[in-house]
Length: 310
Image (cartoon, rainbow, N blue to C red; front, top):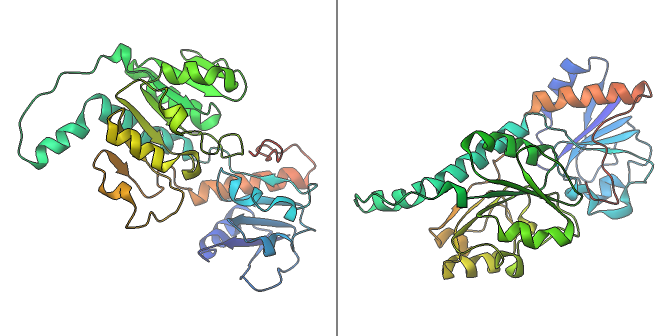
């Protein structure tokens, strides 16, 4: 069995080492841009160029080194539709995402963002506590990662909301669905958390019209994709005070350019796309298990639905 590895940063060696441990019978080969890919049974890739994908018409499946499929689906028909594209499941990312979001929610609820500002100028001034009953947290995206975030937040006692494409039932969570449910979801949410897959329907969903539906003094947390957020619209609402703060881990252009106005806005917290790092060993273990399932003709989880975009 031959497995073709590709990462834009070229760092495929550690992945090959982990495959040698979890799938001892496999031979891993790296692809360098400009070369014709060697014949292989499977490809394991992250953000591959279209030219590479068009050379993979004979592989049995393509595995992604992350949970999002947008970076590969943007190439349209470069991959024949009979070839499964398999994304990572949780692979340790769910708990990281939940930690990140819980930290951001609690930071805003306990006003630590404001206390940081006070500490910077030597000011000692207790602030009134937020009312927890009116500090609802709404998660956009109720899949594996979204539900992991909601479960993490339950012990803190916030009202919890979820919005998804299709109706869901989640214990202890008020669920909204589809375009008809979006307005009510936003109007009742104080902290909106975006963990949606990026599709044509969800691109730019955090825009002027939808941000305006949040209550005054709301907060935005984006751990999904930068293209979910209209950056100029967020700046407008931050500067007007309608949005009290934002914690952003993803951006339309990464790394975020030094001249970007987000860097100069103190009410925007920036992190460098680290909310959920890929845990390589767990990811390879998961891929090896799925490869063996495919080899045995068994069902394989996490196959991307190309029509839905995730």
